[in-house]
Structures are given as structure tokens and as C-alpha cells.
Length: 316
Image (tube, rainbow, N blue to C red; front, top):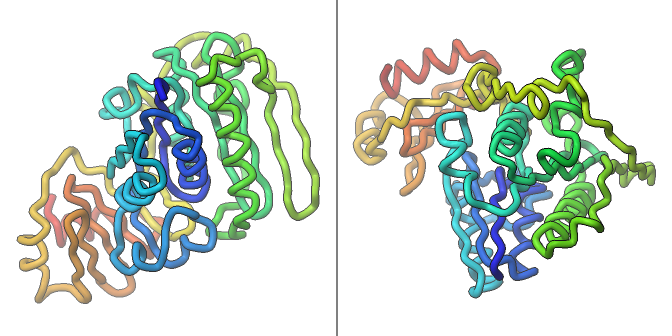
């Protein structure tokens, strides 16, 4: 009850991990997610239901509501936001452990930069298709994510994603369980019982393995302390897992969604709004705009198209 965890991303792994942590009685949990609930999420994202999807509730909001009803003794805070170099310290600072629930490596490398710089332990976790993996990272003690995935090994060839090959619910829950078990060891002060390895498994083939990962003596992050993602020098646009989408990172632009809905009513199709977001269609695209000015354009991977449509309907 005296411990705290921040979960970055509340999709499949993040939702399952948050559920386990609240039931375990972790005193304070913050959940950060930029996305909203859709029907296609329900196959694997255990905190959400059809009502959440029909209302297009932000995942952080829906998760907070569910988790508070599970264990009222836990302080649960859902934040609708995108973790970026400008807000990382505000959102991630002060927690005992950071858990990975994200769907992209840009955010993971940003979290890794932050964790190494400020000495906060974090747990990497990912899954796709029937395969998943996790590794606990303790700055100054273990290898960091940049040791595991050096720059020269990133972005080579075609990568499987949730969008291209899907993801099975069982692997999500297995990886979340392994990640949460490691978090509980850290929170309970049982560091000697951490497995200290990269653990991977495939629930379809039944193949499980764990491998030791060595620290890179020339690692630019944990050795040379170059934090390019945290400094904002390395993050491109973010493509969302499970959809053909681009996110626009606006600079803290406050939007009155009711006014925007009125303005757009005669210009676009199917305008829907709640307290957290506004969604509309410009065939063949769909745009979702949040109160802080961020937007997700569904139907393209081209950031130029996203910027053009944002400027056309929201403003420059």
C-alpha cells in the first residue's frame, strides 16, 4: 500500500497489468494512455466492454472507473495524454516502478531514457501474434533497452505488428503476468529474486526461453548518458498499433470541443463528441481530436496527409 506504479499505455498488456496491480493492493497507480476504446480492442483488452467502445471513452478514463470499482483502497489516476519529451518528467517522476504497456518503440526508448537518467526501474513488455517478451531494467544494475536493441539493429526490414498479424489474448495476459510479478518483487524489496533475464514465450508453439543480456560497455544511454529521445531529438510521428493511423502531437493547444463540433457540423460527416474527445469522418479518413489539441488520423500512414487535414479542419 505504500508503493506506487505508473503504467505507460493501457492497451492489452497495460490493462491486464493494471488489473493485477490493483487487485494486489498497490497503493497508488497512474495509468497514462492517449487512445480511446474501440470494439476491436475487446478481444484482448480486459478492462473494457462494449459500453466503453460505444461511448468511445478514452482508455485511461474507462480503466480508472473499472479499477476503482475493483479495489477502493487503491488510489487510481487515469491520465489522457501522450508521453513525450516535454511531459515525461511530470508524468513519470516520483513512482517506484514504471511498467511498459505501450504499442511503439519510440515511447519505449523515451521511457528508457527517462528511467536511466533519473534512476527509476522499469519493465519492458511487448507482444504480437502469439509471441511476447519482457525484461526488467534497473538503471546502473542491469542492461537498458538500448543495450538490448542498439540503434544499428532498429528498423531493419519488415516488422510484424498487431495490424499485420494480429495478437492473441492469451499471450497478452501471460506477458502482463510476468511483468507484474517482477514489479511486485521490486515493490516488496525482493530484488534478489528478480530473474535478471530477457524472457520470451510463444503460446502457440509452446516455446519458452530466457536469455542473459549483457550491458553494452559503449551504450549511448546507460554508459554515455546521451538521452536523444528524452531531449526530443529522436521521436518521429507515432503509428498506432492495430490501426493504419498517424498521431498529431500538438503543442499543448486547448480546444473547446463543443465549439469545434458546431463549426465542423456542416463541413464533415458523423461528428460525435463527449467530454474527452471529438470524432468525425472525412472520407476515407476518420479523425479523433482531444481537448489538448492532439489528434489521431485513421486511414493513412502519411504524416503529411495528417498535417494537411489537421490544418484544414482544426487550424495551424
